[in-house]
Length: 138
Image (cartoon, rainbow, N blue to C red; front, side, top):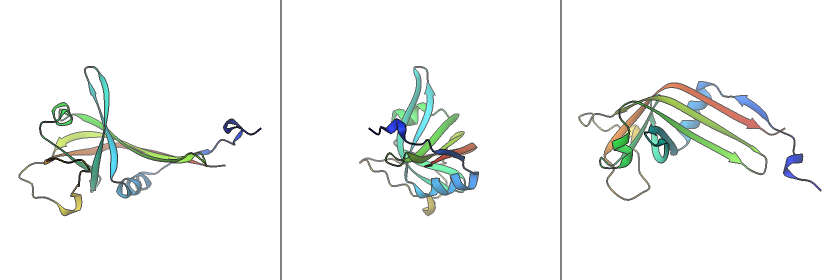
């Protein structure tokens, strides 16, 4: 009887910054994470890339907007294939800031939220550290 534990473990490969940025540019949904007094919280967001920054939008009155105190945040994307037990993950740790309202909209980072409602409050994560890993099947 063959079980999943009998599969050969995959090889772990560290991704370069360029490979991580390529993967970030290919996706449109990721997760932003930050710390609250009660502990860490993670929320999915639609996003776009501007240079090396991650841009996402939220409503001004959301918990996400209220809790992101212009400090540090993390952003993560991933993909996996359960059958081949392979996949990849990219983690960005950086400085969070507001995109100035006076700044003209940049067509390159027009983020189209999937959820209904006004989301005009743009946030930017400027990376300090970008890491990524890929598991390649044996």
